[in-house]
Image (tube, rainbow over all chains, first blue to last red):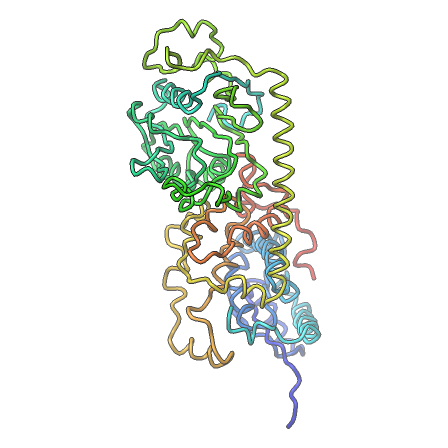
Length: 142
Length: 389
């Protein structure tokens, strides 16, 4: 039986104006990066409720990425500042509640940063390969 | 809101006399009859004899049933004050509240769910409260020594309310002191606490003095104050140690995903914890709505992946989401644990997270009206490095 290597599954909430456009630029630039990301487009990183991150994390997603504009550049002025606070609170809470904060990444990636986007997915995938599959994937009691 | 949260030193008074509860009732009558408020929210003894019920009182006669000292907290009065002050036109309300209720009220005011304008707060220093059912059992004749105060009270470092206009004191004060209270200058004057001729006053509806009443108020002696400070320090130290132990224990239990699942093993998704939390003010929590009514085939898919899937789904998600939404305003009243029908130590779990999420911002829920709740504000320059990668 051929054993397939572990391929992390990453869920990405990408803001329409910056990160999603940056991802598009990576594509049009033909930059190579691992195919492990599943993208969900939102208008703003500030629209991400913490439950959007917790749900995949509790169901076995190996990593969750929140992509937004750099602080100061949010299309809606303040959304990313709120996202930043929520991400900080989330990390503190899951740290003591049995989940691994290393599986949640907040990244500021602008529309012109196709390269940064590709690199982010590559490093996140590599790191998740090190961490291994999310144990919640088989935990039916959660 | 005038003197609320003012840092001015409050004078401390005592009125010697054997009937502390009677003296307290007379004090409350004086507040209600003062003309400064339209009604008073206060715990009353229920005629059934086994319960304390919060009630909004207009007739000072009804204050004969008041019992601010009864060691039971059926629900957090902050929620009730919110019902009385959030909408306009707004009555002028007096409220008799414990420390955790006042702190929750301060959070609700900052979350625009209550208003402190024109309110008179009578704080009650608290030595701990029993579960509602246990209080009833003792009232019906069971031995009080069979019961302990709630876990939340055992780790409460705030037995003395701050921010009240008048505070009824209990800790470190002997029975011989009678009714002891702290008061701001304005209420001290209104109540005539300073008035040494009061014992000559005829009894009347201003209620404070009378033939059957306590003696005139006198300021607490330096010795009495020292004894009190010592006892308060000892009690708070003991409570802080208990808190540290309980929270450390809890965090040990929830250190793994299995531990997280185990701590909520008995959860039946009644949502009592959320319903009784004074901070959870959403009229319809999205966990009760359609958002989490999944397609039937989705449930089957999840069951397929894991072999089986707990039903209903999203139990850990509910608790973790609630922690993220409200833990920065958690005041540790513990009513979540009290309301849980299946014995989950929700209060300890949430406090364990709350202490960390609040510390992240140097914030303490209920400490000040001037500090914005962390989820309602941000700084442009903060949490450096987060998001940079």
